[in-house]
Structures are given as C-alpha cells and as structure tokens.
Amino acid sequence: MSRPVVVTGLGLVSCAGEGVDAHLAALAGEAAPRTDSETFAPYPVHPAPAIVWDGQIPKRSDQRQMEAWQRLGVYAAGLALDAAGVKDDAAFKQALHLVVAAGGGERDYAADGAILTGLRDAADPGAYLNERLQNDLRPTLFLAQLSNLLAGNIAIVHGVTGASRTFMGEESAGVDALRIAQARVASGQIDAILVGGSYSAERPDVLVIHEMGGYLARDAYRPVFARGESGGGAGGFILGSCAAFLMLESAAHAAARGARALARLEPVASDRTRRAPGSVAGSLETLWRQAGLSAPDTVLSGATGVAPITAEERGALARLAPGARLRALGDVIGHGLEVAAPFGAALAAVLVAAGGAREVAVTAVGHRRGEGILRLVPA
Image (cartoon, rainbow, N blue to C red; front, side, top):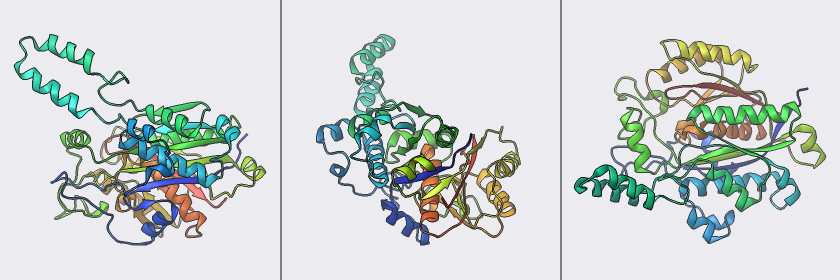
C-alpha cells in the first residue's frame, strides 16, 4: 500500500522572517538575505529575526532553559501545529509522531572557558579535567546540549507525545527525517507526523568547527552559485539561523478532518557517494529518476557553495532541468545543515500552495557527504 502524503501545516523561521508570507516574498524577490558581517567577522551569518517567543512558548521558565536552537525549533513546531489547525487538539497531539533533524546543541561557553583556563596551571591536568567534568556538567550529562532535547521540549511545550525520533548527521539527517516520515505515512503505519529541525548559526563554536574544515565563506555575501568562481574566493557556506517543521498526513486523514492540503510530498530519494570527481552529478541523475522527476518548473537547491561540489551540482541541474527556475536556498535563508532539506520541502510546499509552481524539485547535497532529492506537486 502506498497512500498519498500531503503537507497540511508549515512552521518557518529564518533571516527572512517567520511564517509562510515572509518566505513566499523572499522566494519571489532577488534581494540578498539579511546578513550580519560584523559580529563574527570575517565570517558572515544570516541571523534569526526578532521573535516574541511567548506566542508559541508561553512559559518564561521554558524559554530560559532552552538555548537559541531549541527555542527556534519549538517555536517553528508551534507554528506548524497552528497552521495545521491542531494546536488545541489534545487527542490529535497525543497520537502525533515526531521526527527531528538536529545537530549537537549549544555548548556551555563559561564552563569550557573555565576548564581551559584552569588546565594551563593544573599540577595534574588529567585529574583536574576529570574533576571539572564531574562537577561542571549540565544536567543533560554533556557540556553541549543533546540533539534529542529539541524533541523533548516540543513534547513538553506543545503536548506532542507520540513516538519521536531524532536524526544527526548534517544535511543527510534532514533528508532521512523526511524520507522516513513520508514513508511511514505512505505505508499506512501512521496517519500523521510532525517533521523538521532547527539550527542556530550565531555560535562561535560551530563557526570554529566548520572553519577548521575550510567550509566557511568569508567577508561579504555572494550568491551561492557565484562562490568559488573567478573573483568569488574559495567558496563555502554562510550559516543561517533557521527552523522548519512540516505536518505530514495521509490525504484521507487530512480530508476526514477537513484540513487543507498544501502540496503532496512524493517518496524521498537519498544516496551517499564517496565524493570522487563526478560522483555528485552521477548521484543526482540517479536520484532524479528515483524521485520521479521529469520537467519541474522550479528547483530549490540546497547547494552549500562549497567548491567544487556546488559547481558539479549546478552542471547536473542544468542538464536535468534546463527550463526550470533554479533558486539556491542559501540565497534565501542561508545554510542550516540538518534543516536544509526540511526547509527546502517547506518552501516547495509554499510555492505549490500559492500556485507558483506545478512541480518543485528540492536537492540536498551535503557539504562533505550525502545527497538527496525530493519532489512536491499539487495535492
């Protein structure tokens, strides 16, 4: 059995703003996304918008115990529940399943700094480190917040208490979150699932991590597909603070409760190559066929800007969809790693629901591993 899977609710937050209208306007325009080039210079970031958290996280105590990445995700999940018309339906939420894609949470910078400072003068560095780790750990048993805390806080704040699953693994995690969520509804295992993720880019620790790999773009913003070209530097991504959640339901389940179907999500195709020259192009061509794509009118690319992978993807898309409008997600919201595929799917649903596209292809090619393609069409 394979049932049609439809999108009935969206929660979106990024540098473009919050909600569907703000992101539809950002997609329609060609202006550069809002960029902060000063705070972490020479590395630009696309910052989160100003948000009144009380709208989706009413308890100040809940807000205080979350770091930015969790607040973004919990807020976006609440927007999706609202949009799907189930925010106040306790019975629906008790049975609602949840799939989250998220990386490791934010670190305790004060504890990190104190430990590193103390190590300089410690007579026995090993003993000192063990003592500090035993005494300075967060209640989460780690100096960084665990990725599955986002799912836990969505359950606590919004009452989503069905089974939950969390994926880690950069861009591929977002692809697999969507792939499994879609497949579970299509197969008849469940009727509805909330899927998405969140990412906070405004963190010194993640900037250090990605700079060590040579993946960050520097200095002024340049469009994704212009990075790495002549005069465009060595390429790389500009991280963006963002969150996206989608409510997926079987078409019959959505119709039975009178919910509007925004778009239909087809089975998600994923791959993982060894990244030899030409492997990304070959993978995309295979995934294109697996996803059932022929001639989409729009392609939303999750290309990171990292060279030479981004150029290889662009060449493959030029062959696969020569007449399609190509839009890089990084030119709208920045790069959110685990959130790239869910955000791409959400924006594709926005376009389809608004009548701006009949078939949208979304790519999610990781900056160092993993490839994915998905397809959204009118419901």
